Image (cartoon, rainbow, N blue to C red; front, side, top):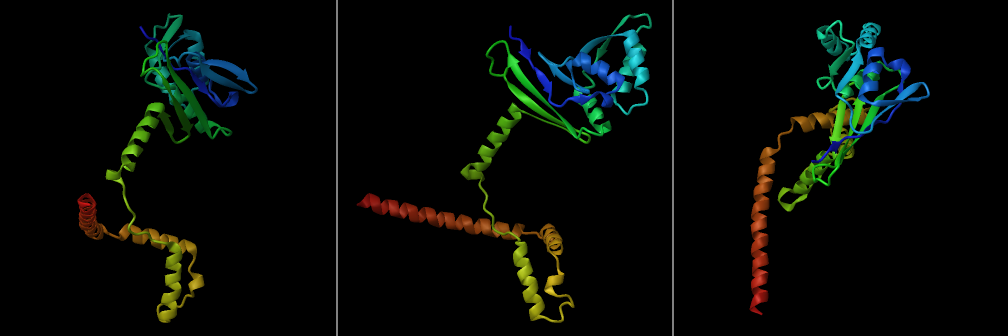
Length: 253
């Protein structure tokens, strides 16, 4: 039987001032924690826990002390606390429906010093299984949680390999060059004095950039692309015919 592990580190120290009592209670059960200056460093030797046990009194006090904080975990835990027996000394909390990434995101949202938090996870196995090793990196900001595993990276490589194969290569037929547009502006104004009362210098790079974006969005070049692809098909046939003819001549020798 193989055992799978996912040791994880939270790379940034989380300031004590940014963590609510409930978040502290949960995070110190999900992870191991070590003091680091005015904050806590969180890590998991084997894997972050998604089932934790807390005392009834501790949980009640943590919920009361965090009631006014903007934290999604409050309602999630309060619902489980309401279902627990009032005479129970210990309460089992299922955190599988509220991933620790969301707890950290709430901390980042409220923090005046943290712009983001990053987490690194290693995937390891007690046996050398092909699916037992790898890793994941997670970036947590106030607006998003983004992650990419080594499997995702390999899929990106494979997709890029397919895109780079001869059957999938593309060739640029047209680009809209902003410096050339500026040259055209000068020529147009010089050729037709009635075109505008502005000088060429009065038209800024930002004006040209915005105009190029608008023209690119409005342009429909599918017919031109189809015609170019058809011409390329005829040229490819001609190229193949010339290659075969040269090969025939060389073989006749």
